Length: 488
Ligand code: ADP
Image (cartoon, rainbow, N blue to C red; front, top):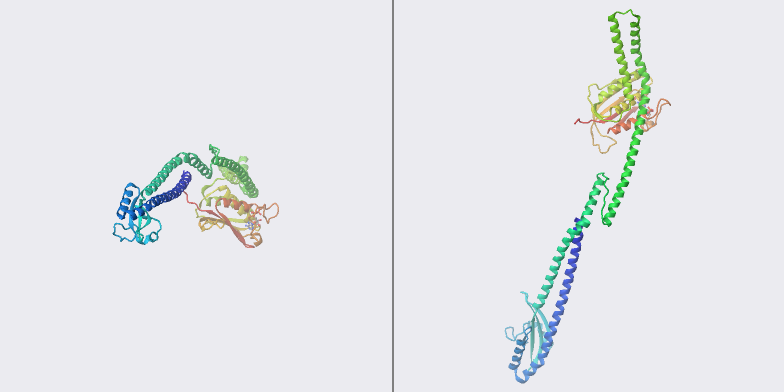
């Protein structure tokens, strides 16, 4: 509607300006023609009287000539005719209406016309026809005509233009309301609505505009664009889903590789309870035990079986493929579970795993399985970096930090989870590459080069980052930061 109003407004303004200019020029031209006619009429009339008056003045005297002028004046009601004496002082009844200094040319015998307007508005056209009487005295006929008829005509013309402009304006407003709204405003409004919906991501409901004009062309182009966007969106969704599935597959494979490593440690761990179970079962089968002793042995067998089930369940839980899901959970719990799971493997390698933050509560919104995978990857690396055994410290620290990979992060609260080892450390030249997929310094069969790259992606998906400090020959410290979220 705004565009329609503007368009019609500009057209109307243009028409009004053209009307005004044309009207002004027409009025000017009209006035000039009328003035010229009035002047010519006065001159013709004056010239006709001039010779007659001069003749009567000479033959029958001044009085008779003045009587004749008076009579002519009475008969001509549009033009006032007077005799004027050009030398008469201002208050003399025969003094001219125009000031004497303007009548120089008339005194030299020339016919002259003057237009004079009083301040009050009334205007007159004076025509002077010089007449020489008594051979030396110079007088003149003064013919005056009121310009009021001219003014009236101009006034009427202005009124006519004004009324025309008003009618045009009214018609234009009606045109804006009827045509402007119907032909421009409404289709434009629907187009804007459609574009807004596209902006909000709603690509449904194609827009149909009747008329076949530019607007309906635009609507068709918009509909085509929506269809193309829709197709592209579907393709992107499909590709993203395939990519996520591939990543999940890779992560799962990485997890299974760790499970393989853990299995030997767990098998060792199961050895003791199995020995106890088989020993106790052997005792029962001898038949030498009292009822009380049989009860005790059965109790021990039950406890040891439960211990073995718990150990195996831990491994199976870790190996299981879970769909990604973030929940609010205490990070300490996950660290402890992981340490528990890894301890048999650590023991087998003569390494000691310890948790250094027993009293920290660290609530964070995380995917338990994924964070556990990150931790196991870091601990497996630490173990592999210490072939002769040593200590591995795992801890959690609340810290105020700034994500170095996110320029929008101006600093906030994070939990830093670290794995500190006393291993071989990382060579300076390898530091740049350790997070790259398939980068490994380990022998074939020992390393795939995927552990750190998977850990990096998982932590990034959680809004955090991984940091590493290492001194070759002394050890390394891998830390990952997770946003500390306030539970709502
Ligand atoms: P992989 O362990 O299969 O080689 P990763 O991506 O886990 O793959 O690790 C890449 C490389 O980073 C390792 O080959 C190793 O050189 C180095 N690295 C990782 N963690 C440690 C660590 N704790 N101590 C020394 N080097 C490490």
